[in-house]
Length: 318
Image (cartoon, rainbow, N blue to C red; front, top):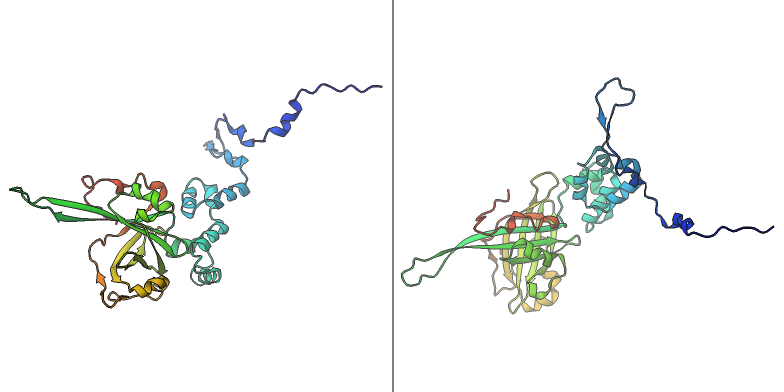
């Protein structure tokens, strides 16, 4: 007996090409008030998290693994389930080890149990640390008298300029002083700046809440810029302010330029009158000492620091 083979219509291959999407069943679902099970109360309870019925906890944790610690803090405010999911020690352990990678894994473990009771989340919130997801900006203004012409009274100009610092987890940082506003400089510091951008790199150390940073201005007469800062936050764990304690420039001997690593060694601290060139004494500056304010990259375009001088003649960082 001959076997009859039905004609191929192509529909049998759809099961291999179509990806199962169980969350599509949530579309068009009307959320209705449902009374609690086993309760005699007639007060309705709204189930507004239908997506959690289709999203397993393992997948939710995988999504949170790719988020920054400050994004996790915002995610914890979405609902109760997300709040419990963001308390996973693995998420905060990875954030702490990445932030303090210069300290080393063993030292971080010792600090964790000695000072923070073994909680990685508490360590992240209470241990001072520099932020790497944005820029620290210092807005400075001063009054400069103009030149008198004919019988015109001397004009007065309000000069505004900015200091920008971006820190990295390996103990290095980028520094730039310019009159350009935040949104015009952020793209330069996010990428790989060139020499024409006048961006200088240096090294820094963080001891408790004190930051010591140093960089070299190249040129015919190289100069070392040393900045001492104090880290603080407007709320717990923010670390969004840097107070300028001192700002010193000193000369560099030509013989020391070949050993730039030793010149930028800031691990043992430095004095205000310390200089690397006996012929050029150190100079302590008192202008441009406004505190640095942290601005995340996602808030660069909307920050108030982009306003011109006529709309914001001063700025109080708080």
